Length: 293
Image (tube, rainbow, N blue to C red; front, side, top):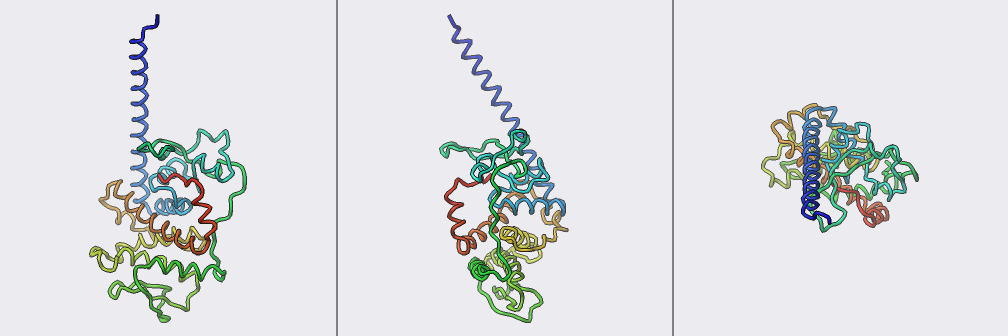
């Protein structure tokens, strides 16, 4: 006759041991994320590397992009096995154990917390060619609609100023954005993206801590992420003082600031996409979205 008591004790011990192992793995991954966030906000080159990957994966969380970059420095476009399956692509058998370990939400929405899973780079997959991303051309028919939609995300009004030596500028004293109508559509788009980010940070004067110089890196980063989404040529931010900007910040605070930048660029991009590429936006929302963390 089986010794039920011994079986219960054995299985309970095995389960507790496995939970301890998984907790250690989770703790180690959290430490790697914290270290990566500190690294990418302490070096100009590493910050720009982070922005490149985040821009190509705007729906992915900051923490997971940092983890991916730490484990797969050459990654460009990433997603879970399920995400790639939705794109008609499949992770190659020999690459199954080579993904970046990240935190993913549970498939069952009734469950709480996050679980460890994997992101795979597009180079680790095979299958149907990826669809070309939405792109705005300088004199294309959609650029005017995109500019109008972008202007709609501004919390302040606009005025024309052809005498400026830049495409756009947010005047925090008069709470207005000036636009140089003689600049090209692309230049105005890039300039507007940055200046609207400044205006949103200032929040019509409600943010008494607003200082243009201190918020400039954030605003440039928002513009870069947004422009990268639509194939618009935009220089990487001047990150030479990034270590100064994030000095004294805990890893969690760095993540919060970067996530605020990501969300601003994502939301502005979603607004433009709904107006200019409505069918593509509908298709994206009809699928299960790529995990956000």
